Structure formats: structure tokens, C-alpha cells
Image (cartoon, rainbow, N blue to C red):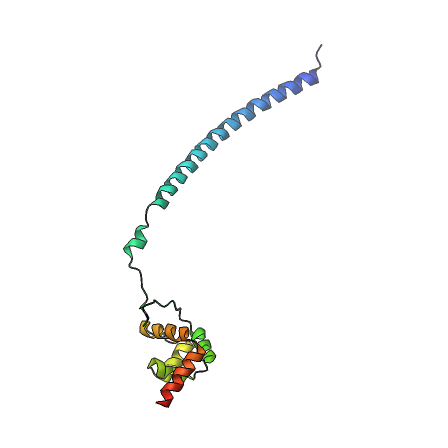
Length: 146
């Protein structure tokens, strides 16, 4: 005669497996659906990445003004950077103002960040920065001798 405890255990295991099989079947179906959605989204992303961006094509690109030698300056204005450049070149605000053909107060306003220079003046900054300290000092000396 079979042991009632063993039979009860077998029946419980069978019922649990049956319930688990039903649960995992729904999970497997949803997993397949999610994988299909992911595949479709990846395909759409690949197509969109191959297309040229419409927003960048519709917006005109800002081109910096060319310098005297024809090259475009890549100069980003920062008030602290202007002050640092002026101090590196050992220029007073008045001398820098005369070079840029603006007032001394305008230079102080730029350094304080209360105003910003025009594109033309930014081009002059870029030219000045490319010249370097020695060349700027030599140019100023020549101008003062004349």
C-alpha cells in the first residue's frame, strides 16, 4: 500500500507545476511581444539616424567673421578671459580700449560682464590674442614712436 504522505506530496508537486506552467506561459508571451517591440524600435531608430536632421538644415549656421588673413577666428568671449588676456599682455584698460577703438569704461563693462562686445570687436580680440604678448608690445611701441 502506497504511503499517503508520498502520494499527497506528488499531487501537490503536480498541481504546483501545472499552475507555474500557466503563469510562465503568459510571461513568455509578453516577453516575445516586448522583444518584438524592441526590434521594431531599433529599426525605426536606425532609419531616423540615417536621415539628415531637419532642424539643423532649416536653421542657418552662424559663421564667424573672417579675420584680416582670411581665417575665421574661434574666440569665445568670457569676461574673466578678457581680463586675464589684458593682464597677460600687460595692457591697461585704456590701452586696450584705444586698440579696440572703444572707451575705457566699455572695457571695464566687458570685464565686469555687464555688457558684451560686438562681433567686430570679438574678431579684433581673436586677432590680438593670436598676435601674442611680444608682438602686441612691439606694435604698441612702434605706434607710440610715430
